Length: 322
Image 1: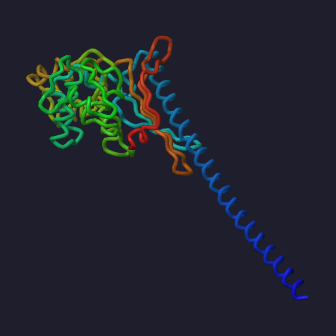
Image 2: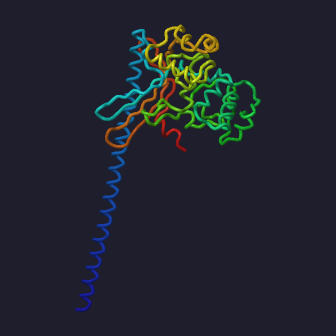
């Protein structure tokens, strides 16, 4: 009788152990399922945010194409200012910047380059390093400037590489220059309501997509204008205010605003001709959830309403994460 009782007790303990095991397995499976559902939901939100950003790009390209077809690209608001578009899924914020409104990084004087970099708030040591290293990258000799870099520096990198010693061929190439990282090259204002929402990165100031050293007054950001000879902060701000009211079609108004003597100093560096190559940065953010996606693209408008993608940086914020 005692043996039978022991057997029943052992069986009961076994059953209870199995039930406990099954319970723990069920709990674990439930947690895994919940995690998978959350992961799937986050992925779905990221995909929606991505397509919102794509929609912003498409809308900006459409507006540019339409204005060029109408013969009035001056109304394109291509100075990097933000535009918002509310959709049922979320908010799209996009900014357009004419490459003609930027400084030609492949044909840059040290003085103007340094003045442009000062607008980014770099400390003095890094400013000089970036200035000289950018100049060393595009010049044809192998002799480094005082704060620059040539083969001796770049061949110690992992992996090692050599400077181009000729013109930049891609905006992404700028990140290979000493002192420049992804954040400095492609950073942008995370808040469209910020005072400088179109960005604080080199991409806002410099371009590789033109040959001329002249800057379009109708689309140049304030920081670009401040790098030009003959302009101080107050005068540059007046130019921005005047073009917002009515785009410059010639230099008569510009001369009155700047003044005769300073205009002669400024004139060799400016134009009022828009270009057909634009940087577009578009951010999609869902109304529900925290998902957002940002795309930076450089497009060239071709004939018959077609566009050519010259450069594409997907998920800008993530691109500079270590």
